[in-house]
Length: 238
Image 1: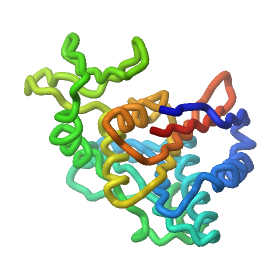
Image 2 (image 1 turned 120 degrees about the vertical axis):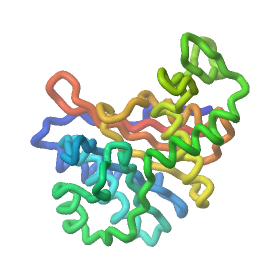
Image 3 (image 1 turned 90 degrees about the vertical axis):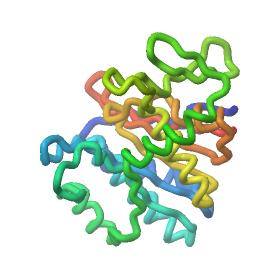
């Protein structure tokens, strides 16, 4: 598997907007027909939407890349992962920061493909975990082992009350990639605020490819580091 860092940006919060535009231009050559672009993430706690400016920035970067790709007549999809485990009683809706971005780039909300975390977890438990052959069970966790020495990824943990293994974030995001491939996509571009995800360091792509996934994957991590913002683009191929 080919996995390498192909680009890094270090900016201040003030310069983030200009960097997002440059990032979209730099990612555009990787976009082919059949590319799914995923960005944005926020938590919902007791009906309150808790956004983070970097998570919002990933949605803007994904939306801008989608818009630029469409002007090049590329067949692309814009997607969003909904944290619907946290939704109680009321249905999902985008917070105002995200609605402003949709309006800014004239995006029809009906054109966005939504993935739901609970559905991904159910499918990961039913499909992905059952595919694991080279696995290790240790202290209530399931790890999938890589071909590389000492490299393994935690994909599930035993539920304390139900006493069954439940998929973790890495498994959910790997399942999202499998679902995207099943829809006919060839490339996946994931723009993520690193602080909003359990899965880090490209673990989703590693697990996806270890289990036979065929898409090329670009993970673009936004992170706060030493009072600055670091954006890292990593390319993953089978």
